[in-house]
Structures are given as C-alpha cells and as structure tokens.
Length: 134
Image 1 (cartoon, helix red, strand yellow):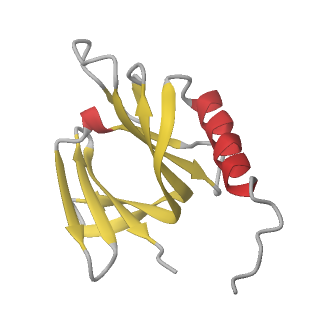
Image 2 (cartoon, helix red, strand yellow; image 1 turned 180 degrees about the vertical axis):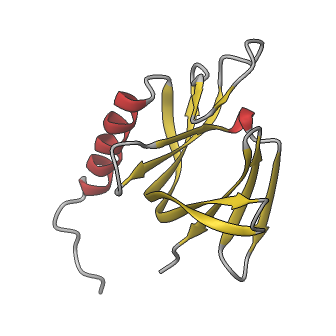
C-alpha cells in the first residue's frame, strides 16, 4: 500500500507559488506548461567554436502567455508579433538576472538526447540548455 500524502494540496500550492513568482517577472504568463527543475545556459562562440557558460542556471519554466513579452535578453520581438504565445523563463540562481525567452524569438531548435542538450537559434546567436535529469 503506498504511503499517504501528508499534504495532498502541496503540488497545487507549489504550482500556485511558482505562477505568482513568474508573473512578477512576466505579467503576461497565463499558465505553466512544463518545468525542468535544473538547467544550465550556454552561448555558442563562433570565434572559438565552443560553448561558453552564460552564468545562468536554475529552474526552467515553459509557460503560455496572454500577451507577448517584449524583453528577450538582447533580442526583441518584432512589433507585429501576436499577443499570445509561449515563453521560457529560467529563474537564475547565479544572479538577479533571469532569462526570459519568448519562443517567437527562436528561429531554430535542435536537441542532443545523449547529452541532454537543447540548442536554440535566436537573433543574437545560438543558446544551449543543458538539462539535468534525475
């Protein structure tokens, strides 16, 4: 017989807390679709042909949005974009600067399942997420 959950509302409470925190950063967030508990962000250096740490790591949230987030790090979404969509947010444990990346700003995606690495092409270059899997 499985042990009883001492607090059956804990998962709902955690999701609600995460949503409140994310909405402080991006008010247009509608709901959390997926969470990766820990990722590390890298940027690709075309000069050195290597991945460099972007000094950003923490929980990654894929969220639906009611209105587009215009702040995309160094990238911006063109004025004609739709007012709803999806945004990724990394709550950075290394600094107060969180990553906010609306998926409308992503022009290409690749995934290396063996290395647990997701590569995203954006206007400023290529970013990579290493995803910790327990």
